[in-house]
Each structure stands twice: as structure tokens, then as C-alpha cells.
Length: 105
Image 1 (tube, rainbow, N blue to C red):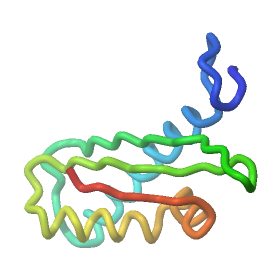
Image 2: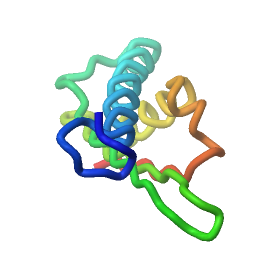
Image 3: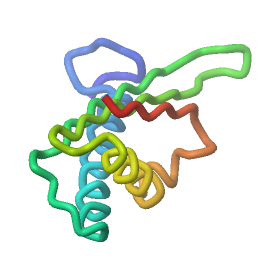
């Protein structure tokens, strides 16, 4: 383990959050696809970027989820991402608590 924001030899907390949220979000996309009776042609690609920011109020996190759903029409992909964001436990815990941007790429 490395300290927050640190480059040290181990994994830092931001990287752990990114890994956990990405895995959870991928599962939420699969559940949403099943509920919508859609078959995902390929596994989703989720690149979670977590920033540790310092301002006058102290430290705060910000996040970007960059999601690719190859082979899925954009409107369906958007619906899957929105449904996943509503049901993913990480998204539920973080929404309203940190700045989140979700990009469908």
C-alpha cells in the first residue's frame, strides 16, 4: 500500500477505488443488459480515473468513468450506462459526495 496521492511502490487508495468501482460498474452493466434483454457483444471497457484534490476545504475526490461498449448502438449504450449508474453500489455511495463525470466513449 502507498499513501493517498503518493506514487510509492504499492497501490494507493485512489487506485483501489478505481479498480473496485470499475468492476462493480461492469457487473451493473451486465445486469442492466440482462434486464433489457440485450446481449453485450464484447466485454465493456471501463477506465476509472480518481483524482485526489486539495482546496481551501481540504482534500476531496473527483472521478471520471470512461466507458466503452463496443458493438452497442450509442442510444442503447447510454441507457445501459445510466441504468448501471443508478444500481451500482459504488455509484450510489459516491453520487452527491464527490464530483463524478461519466463519459461514454
